Length: 224
Image 1 (cartoon, rainbow, N blue to C red):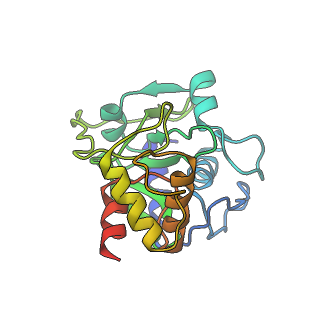
Image 2 (image 1 turned 120 degrees about the vertical axis):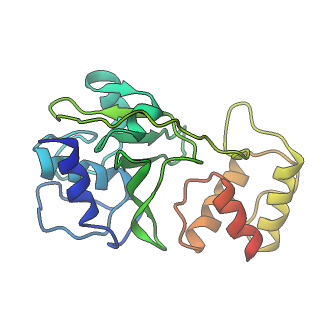
């Protein structure tokens, strides 16, 4: 099986629903959702190739793409993954935070379980925060010419150690508080209470509840 098979199968599920923490039966070829991001990618890989990757059993929730990439996968740059049909692109989860994972279409686009509002969608690689590209052993990939990755042009506010500190975070906290999401006050520090408030806000409007204030989340927060 090839990476193009991965893309073809993933595209057939665009429009299906999303649910954070959904338990997806990897051996059910007729499954139509709901999906979360990691389970969607693992299901597509299992159905297209028979390879069980990024999870512990056929019916178990997936939370192990980082583990498998480091132990038995091939980690590549974001540029390589962006230009390789079927490659996987991962944003790592930190302690207590939510990661995100997508399938690359090889032309700068993605297939992904994005959020409750829009479900499985086609989106883009550029302008987002990613940690690694992944190629799965046993799959034949046919990469296109390398296309440069364009990282975010704005700061993505998120939970880090040490905590991020900025007056912009204070503006985010004030807006969240105004909408009823408790950040513990306005102190310009992106700590756990602010992270939790961001997640609750994202979930309330159907965004992927990853707790990160990207340009998209900031725009939705400001627009409400």
